[in-house]
Amino acid sequence: SIDQLTPTELRLLAFIGAEADMPALEAELDGNNALRKAAVAQGMARRGLRQRLIDRADDPVIYPCALQALATDPADMDSLRVMISLRPPEDQREVWAQAIRSAASSMPVGSLIEIDDLLADTSWTDAGLRRDVLMRISEPSTPSLAAAVHVELLRRLAGLLIELGEGALAYEVLSAANGTAMNDALKDVRFQAAVTSGHFDQAVELNRDPAAWILVAQALAARDPNAAAALRDEITRRFGGELSAQQRSELEQISRDTGENGTAVADAPAARVRP
Image (cartoon, rainbow, N blue to C red):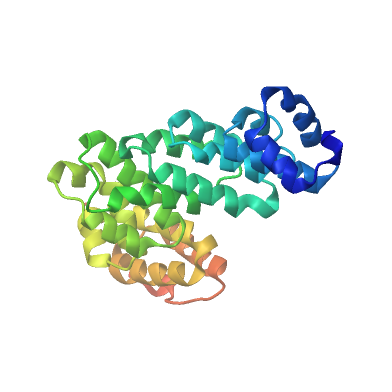
């Protein structure tokens, strides 16, 4: 009787047993004994019996085995789509994320937009995982891609790096992208990367509208007050004579949001009235 088997014997039976053994093994999966359940799940994962495990992946004992079963075969879009859809228990989020990184790394680079779309639409994904998956596009060995695909991947990667406070890396990645057409298509995110990484002279070549600089400073205020304050001071120094009353007010609000005063915006020269 299967009830008399030890967990080690159950694991072996799940791996090499006959189809006639499956109903009893599935009953163990649905049972309350975590050791026996885990043993059966591990054997099924090694055997590649994915669907039985996927159907029960909401059980935290079975969950890692469902991921393992999906990762056993060479990655394809269907298995990766299922893997992304398996919401991990809180204590297994990193196990899930590492499985996604591993599977995505073996997929064609041209599929990264679809993978990123799936991750972006999943509430248990974070920007760090999306960044990790997309970083392949920055590798020198990346196969050639259609220009539109390459631009879109770089735009997404740079945006995530900026969001994560890695503006210097975003600037480096974008600086390595060659081609006038690509630079033009990435102008907005190149500007944001230049501003957030402190490359102010390069940033002003891309956009000298103080309103655009203020928008970046406002976005920075919540996640990096020190960087926002430094940028506010640079805006005041660089554009002081061009700032409107509204823009001065916005910079003062950034001062309040960052909890310190920095350069006094009110003391900057008033905007010149153009004829």
